Length: 72
Image: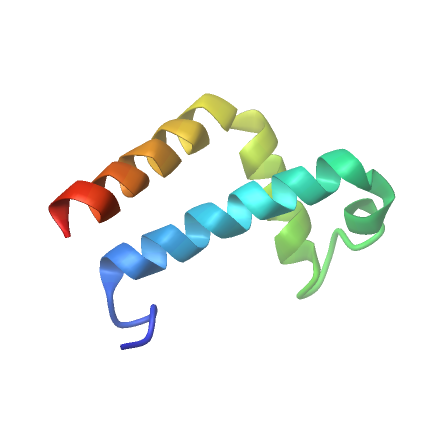
């Protein structure tokens, strides 16, 4: 089943995208900063969300991990 049709998988994919974009932006800021608009601007926006809402993103990743490990 695709992640688009399963809500829990969709949330997992979004959380991993935000965490990955934040990590890449911390290592190579110029890679994401030059693409602030368009389709590639989505990755820059995900990096901003990860930087500004870091405790909440981390808590959501932990909650998703617990739900995948123990509730599925």
